[in-house]
Amino acid sequence: MNYFNIASIPGDGIGPEVMNEGYKVLKAMENLHGGLSFKIEEFDWNCTRYIKTGTMMPDNGLDILKDYDSILFGAVGAPEVPDHISVWQLILPIRRAFQQYVNLRPIKLLKGIESPLRNKTEKDIDFIVIRENTEGEYSNSGGKLHENTPHETVIQNSVFTRFGTERIVKYAFQYAKQKGKSKLSVATKSNAMNYSMPFWDDIVREISRDYPNIPFHLYHIDALAAFFVLKPEEFEVVVGSNLFGDILTDLGAAVAGGIGIAPSGNINPEGDYPSMFEPIHGSAPDITGKGIANPIAQIWSVGLMLEHLGYSDLASVIMAAIEKAIEKGEALTPDLGGNGTTDAFGDAIVSEILKGVEV
Ligand code: NAD
Ligand code: MN
Image (tube, rainbow, N blue to C red; front, side):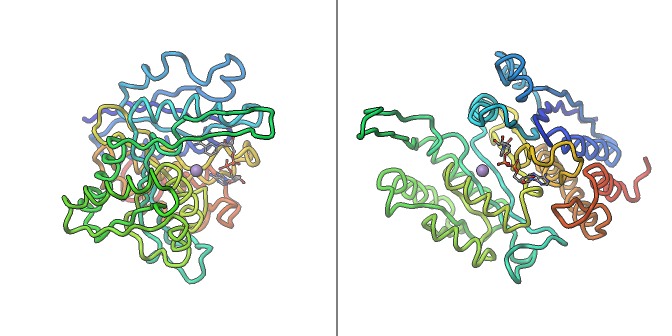
């Protein structure tokens, strides 16, 4: 029997609602694969806790998490708590402390989902964005000068280290090689950002020498964004800095049918620390409590987790079940044009997973 200890942080708003569906899928995986067992430990680290205690997580929160095999995350954020608190006191410390320097975001149009891009089908939109997740433009470095004068000046620094840049670029080339992809697309802006991006590009050129069979193409970020819309079929693997990757993946989620679907993995490739898997959407206060949140992003995130834990076959089962449930269309949530509930849609996916399996 293979046991996995999973830390779960459902968070706020629809986070706990979609997390429940993730649990159902993990249970289904145990039924499907006799030799697997998931022990889930839930943590109430969220904005409600912040309002009560003044902190998003306990002082030893990172210490508590570090021995788990993986972390499942829902979403955080509440109207009463400034967003920078929920992000900087919970999500970013986890990503940084656990060296989750790879943010993996599949951009894949599922069968049965309509892209807002005219005439694009699931054959056209199927790639992955690898975003640097620990430094770059989100480095918490900067300052203010001449406050309260007409010369008030703010400085926001981007910090690119050789270590940090090399490891993400290497990961991207390696990923392309392992998955049998034919090329790597790289986001840059070295015409206008004259320190960081030429450095980034040079490192791409250096690392590329070890991957002679994976040609790379540098795209300025503005043009790259346009190409995501105009010819998404060009892309297989895309690598970008923290800010560029962030923007590209929201755009990618949109072209792949919406935010309720898109999953992500925050990966520590060395396995020294747990990796964390989460939908890219937030806590969606506008639909919280209505029971209509789309659970696909959370369930797909469970799939990414299983892949990371070495069960790609089970991840494929999940993806096939999601597509089947969409195709049947009986329980689609309102964001996909149906009038189903989170719970019923989750059940529909689970029932596809369990087809033919005795429970
Ligand atoms: P959001 O992703 O919560 O919502 C944007 C829109 O998408 C809303 O109309 C919402 O109803 C819809 N939506 C989101 N997920 C959905 C789902 N699963 N099914 C159906 N519809 C869905 O983004 P926002 O409104 O900008 O932010 C709300 C809060 O979430 C803020 O506090 C923000 O800081 C936080 N947030 C957290 C994370 C995270 O936890 N990683 C990410 C983004 C935003
Ligand atoms: Mn984003």
